[in-house]
Amino acid sequence: MSSPKPALERVAAVHDVPPGSLKGVTLSNGDKVCLVNADGEIRALGNVCTHQEFAMSDGALIPGGLIECAWHGARFDCRSGAVKRFPATEPLPVYDVRVEHDEIWVGGRVR
Ligand code: FES
Image 1 (cartoon, rainbow, N blue to C red):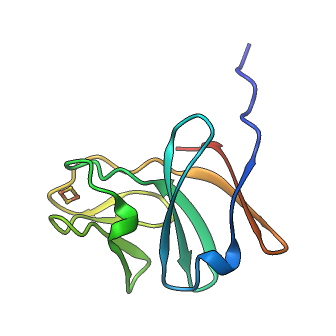
Image 2 (image 1 turned 90 degrees about the horizontal axis):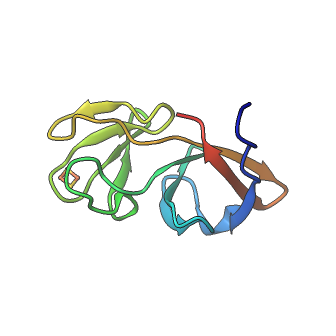
């Protein structure tokens, strides 16, 4: 039997994450999530860099839909979480995310 799908929870308003910005939030289960607004498209990734655990939300969204860690410059695809530049070697988790009206809702990990 598969485990029940985690409920979505409201984590921020869209206007809290303007285009081109990142915002860190914490889910009720303690997971740290980085919200990304890439040209108006909201994404949700793990907020802990897989290199040395720096907060991805302290980094930046750069051209090509990549988020760059502010510490050692690892880059990840903001849609898939895939590593695009060392020194990270493991992808970031990706979370289910929905936008309704001006509200951002995040659910469980999808990857
Ligand atoms: S902690 Fe992110 S690149 Fe090192």
